[in-house]
Each structure stands twice: as C-alpha cells, then as structure tokens.
Amino acid sequence: MIADERREKILSILKDRSVPLTGTDLSKLTGVSRQVIVQDIAILRARGLNIIATPQGYLLMKDLKNRMRKIIACCHDKMGMRKELEIIVDNGGKVIDVIVEHSLYGEIKAMLMLESRLDIDNFMRHYENSDTKPLSMLTGGVHLHTIEVPDETSYYHIVSDLEKHGYLINNR
Image (cartoon, rainbow, N blue to C red; front, side, top):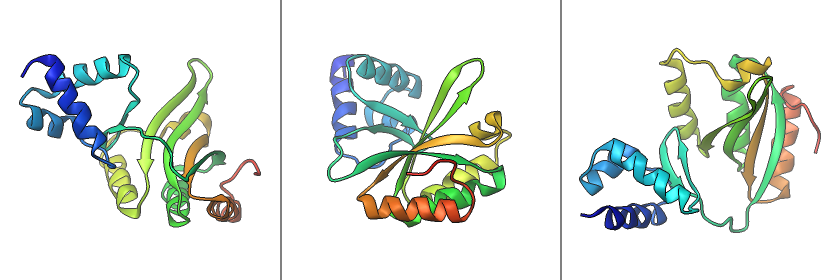
C-alpha cells in the first residue's frame, strides 16, 4: 500500500469511529509500524484535518450536532480529580481537555476526551500507574476544562455540582 492510499485508509477508519483508536491498532490495520502512523497523522493534520491525540488514541473531530461547548475554571488537589471528572460525565458532559496557564510556556492543553465512568477509570488507572503529575499541579490546582454538553440544563447541573464540592472558580 502506498503512502497516499494508507493515509486515505486511516482517514476512512477514523471517520467511521466515534471513539479513539490507538496508533498501535491503526498500525495493525494498515500493516505499518506505529511510527509510520504517527508520521501519517502529522501529514493528515498538516492538510487541515482535525485529528486529535487523546490518552485513548486518535480521534477525528466531527461537527458538533446538537451539543454545546463551554469552558469551566476549576481548582482542586489531586484527590479531587476523579470526583470532578465524575461530576461532569454523570451530568451528561464530556471532558474535552484540560488547560493550564504556565508562567514560562503560556497555555498548555492536553486532550482528555472523557465521557463515561469507564473512560475516567481507565484514565485514573493510567495516572496512578505512572510517575507523572496532572497538569493542574503546575498551577496549584487551577485549570480549565472545555466540556461538551447536550443542553443548558446539563451545563447548569455540572456547574451546580462543581460549586457544591468547592471545585468551581468562576460562575456561568
């Protein structure tokens, strides 16, 4: 398979999925190494495709249908991380990313794409089994999340629950 055909196959695979797919899985499906997949994804991104890398794998971002995006500002210690994420997904939200403002590098953003308790369990397991720290620990716990919600009511419930637990910095 030549490179352009392989990239079209990768794009086709990602278009048909609503959940991320790992580089390893894409390499198996296309018969090339994971490193070749990383390069192919970079080329597809350079062509203007909105392919993001999440902890669960690659995802082609599609148009939002009947969903809203909001940004919330939160602050908590690392013990509050799981509860904060659960509040968001339990109220119908999807955690798109986490953003911190670093004094040297400016804005640092990491894609999360968490929309279920299973996603949170996997994310937390990965965190607990690594020697890394959450981005929010660089800023004393202060961070932003872009969240996707189906409607204003879900957003209101998320904000209310985060306020109740003392995690929310800003108001609507």
